[in-house]
Image (cartoon, rainbow, N blue to C red; front, side):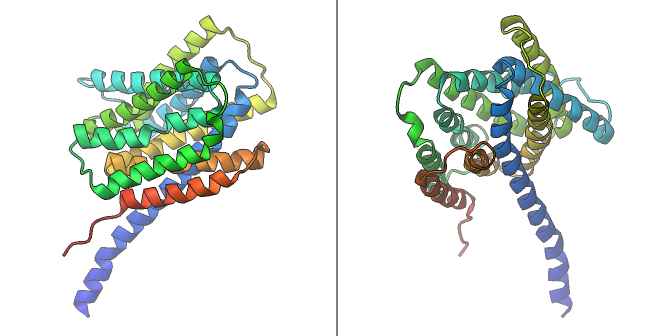
Length: 303
């Protein structure tokens, strides 16, 4: 009886941790999935680079307040290289390149190419961080990406911009490298400031570039303000905090596998909020994604 009580007590914290992790994953998927619709609404009233900069700047400002209240003043000594890489990869290159790519490509095709990121993270984490790459994980990554391809398959018809394809793939690579850089810091920098400072600095630079290149041509309608607020507060501050929290708590490749669900949720929310069409390919793609995520995350049984 005493041994059973001890086992139950030991299982309690593990169960609570698993529950919190599942809740964080679900919230992250919903936040990033809904952000597609918010950005689409926002781009009706703003140039793309300027919108991306304002979104990053707003999210970074909120995160800076939270980071200061939770962690105090940021420690910058000896961490300039880490912060510079996170800013360049996760904000300037990822946000900037994906925004331009979406302007050159059908949105479905752009999403398929940008969500090469989980596959790239799995490969880079195996190559650079020494994380295991089992046959099950390889199969899961391939099936997950195949599901995204099926969902966005209709976008492959028609004219495709080679420059748009190259920019979308480059943005996926930048995001994957940014994830590996954060994982490789291994606690050297505070997780809150790892989001706040890059998005503050990168958002300011993107906003400046947008003002110079595109001009301040923004229609400040209630719809635009709501879209910008959601994209900045939920899609950036909240979502990226959850993302880095999951990456720091486990394997980078495993955490990245979950975001295969994001474009699926984005398609459903687009159908509900924006009246976009749901197709049979969504159901087939969803089945492939679910199977892929299971294979990536299942653990081999011990003898």
